[in-house]
Length: 98
Image 1 (cartoon, rainbow, N blue to C red):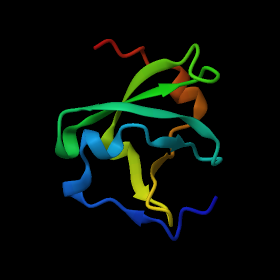
Image 2 (cartoon, one colour; image 1 turned 90 degrees about the vertical axis):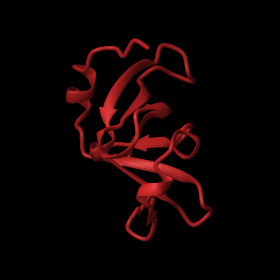
Image 3 (cartoon, one colour; image 1 turned 30 degrees about the vertical axis):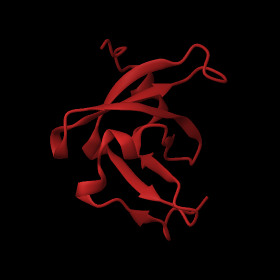
Image 4 (tube, rainbow, N blue to C red; image 1 turned 135 degrees about the vertical axis):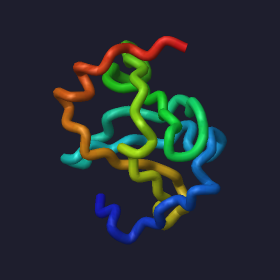
């Protein structure tokens, strides 16, 4: 999928209500997880992303800085995000505990 024609979210749209459930795509455009929720607001916020697993089973929640994500809307106004974080780097992240 080409994300080049998708509209980046404005700073005021970076809320839990907007981001929750957004699919997260890695550098090779593979789906690596889903945003579970946000901690904090603004540029210092973290997105808790459920990575790995299959059909929601065995996924590991990890916290990613919101600054490492590119949240956007596609042509159907569906929110999703991309990250340049490699798969190995994500696997090494500690499990996020609420």
